[in-house]
Amino acid sequence: MLTLGLDTALQRCSVAILRGDDILAKQSVDMERGHAEHLAPMAKRVLDEAGVGVADLDRVGVVVGPGGFTGVRVALAFARGLVIGTDVQAVGVTSLAALAASLQSPGDGVIAPIIDARRGQVYAALFDDAGQEVVSPFVAVPEEALQRLQDKTAEEKVSLVGSGRLLLGQLPPNWALSGAPEQINPVIVAQLAARAPKPSGSPAPLYLRAPDAKPPKAAGLKVQTQ
Image 1 (cartoon, rainbow, N blue to C red):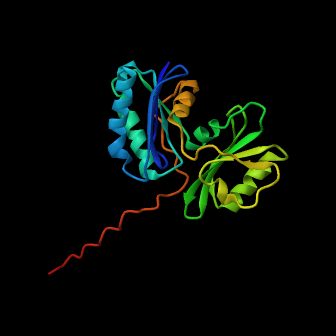
Image 2: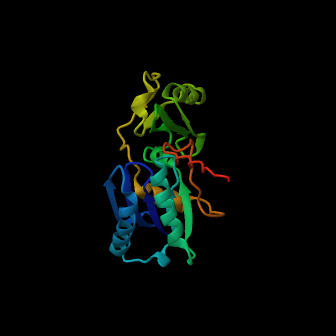
Image 3: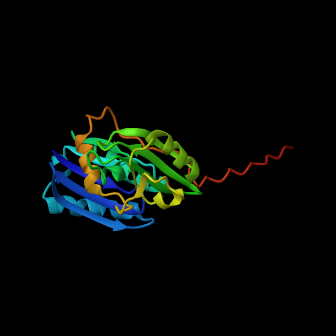
């Protein structure tokens, strides 16, 4: 299977293309903003390096969130545009699942990906060592997130990954911080997309709260009467 992985959900713009488990090409650039300007040229370079075209792809894996609202929309719109008029399937991958997959090791406990969501909150979830969701993605203040995850882990070993893992404060003795990268690996996005069931429709964004920026209210119009 030939799979393209895309990520612009956090502080990176990343693209990778795989044939099976073989990495044909990949590129990543750290950035806070500007994903829209970088993604298309980066995807073209990766496709050219791999020697394939969009029509050759079987699947496009795209990170659907949670993450930055603008970044999530950028990659989703690009993925949807790529598959128009082709048989290529677009598959959504959550940012938390992608982070958890970077640590998966059979028999080594559960994984809690934690992303700094700003505004004093974190995005969190819980996965077993086979990559199955134990606690679905949610947003909460760090203390509440820690308690919700603790309620589901008992005495299991828990490995933390992601930019928000240091925000949880005092950890239980069976919890450990991992040294894994805080950003998403597009290779893992492609791998998860390739393994996913056949999608039934276009991937949708995963927003766990309202956007930080809101459009201004329209000014009321005054109508004069005679």
